[in-house]
Amino acid sequence: MQKSKFNKVVLAYSGGLDTSTIIPWLKENYGCEVVCFCANVGQGEELEGLEARALQSGASKLIIGDLRDELVNEYIFPMLHSGALYEQRYLLGTSIARPVVVKHLVQIAEQEGADAICHGCTGKGNDQVRFEVGVMALNPALKVIAPWREWDITSREDALAYLEKHNIPFPVKNNPSLYSRDQNLWHISHEGGPLENLANAPQDDLYQLSVTPEQAPDAPEIVTIAFEQGNPVALNGVVMGGVELIEKLNVLGGKHAIGQIDLVENRLVGMKSHGIYETPGGTILMFAHRELESITLDKATAHTKESLALNYAEQVYNGLWFSPLREAMDAFFLSTQKCVTGSITLKLYKGNLIVMKRESPLSLYSEKVATFGHSADFDHSDSTGFIRLFGLPAKIHAKVQKMALEPEQETCCQNRKYEMPIGGDGD
Image (cartoon, rainbow, N blue to C red; front, top):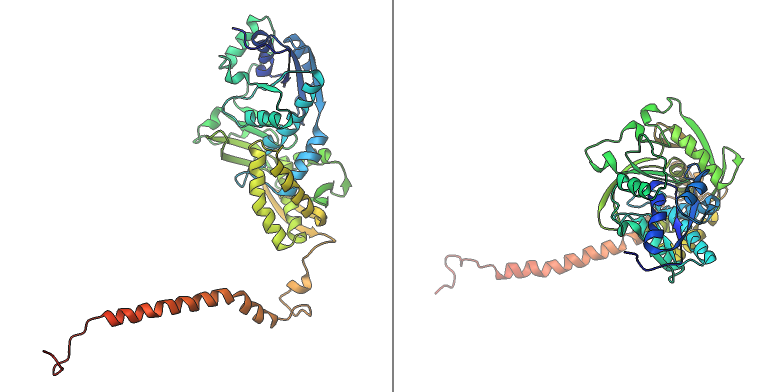
């Protein structure tokens, strides 16, 4: 039975089996024209031939948008400023790429006069929330269609059978991947298949962007990353844009097994999931940025950033990028980056990042003050008064507690019964 009719729907299209199946399914069930949008966020997939496949599947057109620069400068770098990690480990690779895709889906829907947006996310994942909440925030008049929550297709075989029934050819891989993967410029994730059993260790052939530590070179590699106001601007003395810099760090980090994370995380929809993440370039940048902040931020600002970063990570992970709170936190984080200028030199070695040098014209670290030797800038006797004042609350608390306990001790003694000594004034 045909559902409510839409005039035109914009589909987030990848060219894979799921989204290729969604095109004829939308036309059959919603009686609509389907416009496909494919976002290039650095997923590394071949984009040639996608238009022909989309049209062959029944779409009226395919729009491809290169969003890599926008992703880096307006989404990844602000996240880098925050230092946000979800559950202390996940670098938010999938999460951070969704808002920019949603933004352009909405823009195209408005330009095309579409009634709705469609995505291929399953009902178990976080991405359905990120897409749909993003649409609500940017254009609440647009409807959202989620086929995985409606259709009766439950497997790869079902999808292929559906396409065959509608005379739509689809290239079949001889050995389809065991894993569900998501890749962009910042990372690649691996879920499903053998990873659903927590007793299974990840196999070496799982990794796509990096090698295992055992396969990494025995010789370390030294890299220097320069930052200006919190943004990475140069690698080993060569100035370059953010996209190129991340791509080069992905290669260098992957070569030395940097950025592999095996994580059981708490999904927004209420279940735990097991994933393997590779974020070689992102791991290097986050580490270097944090090390530069260690010498350019004062203690109070650095500690406040740490407390806000946890909330920021949840905002991004939960699909709330387009929210007043995230915008307000970004304003704070951006302010903290005014002095985060300098360079960090690192040694990459078998999955490890080792700091070799920290340099900044705005460094708050003073060797003259920090030295254990004599310093004209620090008088040891000054610490006496500081400690007295710093410890004053503890001293007063201890005195009050002692005074409060003394009457109780006296009362106990007063209530204690004693036998009269022989020869006393007894009855």
